[in-house]
Image 1 (tube, one colour):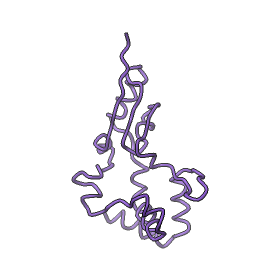
Image 2 (cartoon, rainbow, N blue to C red; image 1 turned 180 degrees about the horizontal axis):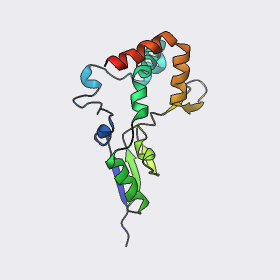
Image 3 (cartoon, rainbow, N blue to C red; image 1 turned 90 degrees about the vertical axis):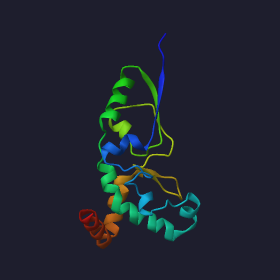
Length: 149
């Protein structure tokens, strides 16, 4: 009788990959950054602009993150048939980068974007490249703020 295990993971799993736990000691919430609600994002153009401006600054480090030993171990257990499904609160895609399949991202996928008008989906990295091209002075300043910490 083979037992099937479901893994439930959260923010702590990705901290060793350089992604701060949102509510942890080094997290964005502790720095006074509060999330934009979906309602506010949809209702206020200024909120969408603020969201994407902040994202232009921080997304590069998020996108560059690599799976750590925990992600790798879970993927190995899954390939060995010990883990059937991974349910994650994380939006970083690191389970998939580690080679896992059957991943259910409870809060969505931070590496994908969707148009709120037509529903067209695409790669967030490509969208950020478009943002940087459309806003070269801001993108240059964002790159500088990342280098300066």
